[in-house]
Length: 207
Image 1: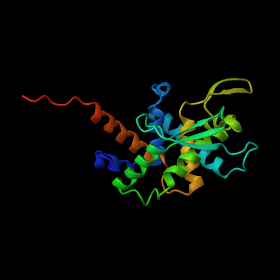
Image 2: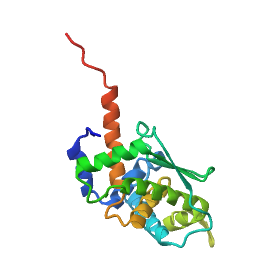
Image 3: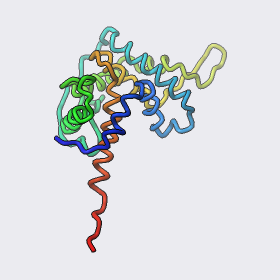
Image 4: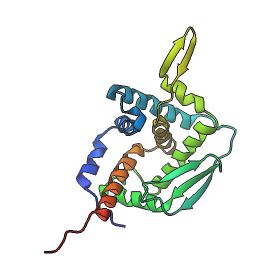
């Protein structure tokens, strides 16, 4: 598969640290528009630490979700998703193949060995399963973002998108990767957008 992308700009993402990539992910979540860069970086850092620790924690009581493969995720830039009701991880093989090709095009095979995209997608969604099923309060406590306090009572807020950052950190730690899958996810999102725009651009008229 040939992936047509602005390779130089995508390769430049390798120079961006994983925590900064996490902060950029949070910046793209609509409810975070008013948060400062410093605050988002703090939340990304704490979510990353939580996700890494979660990967080394003893397994919870619920079993591993079933993994089901599908086509049809590429246009929506969808690599995988966790269905809590069905206790299932859906993997989109066309998007996985696109990401594998992109890794080769960008020269990132040393960072993401063959097969690691699929494995990271599974681990990412497994992290969502663990947070949803067993440790939903743990991430909020790790973020320690206080909304208000009355005496000893504190109410902590959830920061939208931090579960994604934590899940990427979980996959990084559980697979022993040198870089977070956030890197290839950011590159793939941009590449898929470029691909989509190229397909929908009007053809120039002939005169």
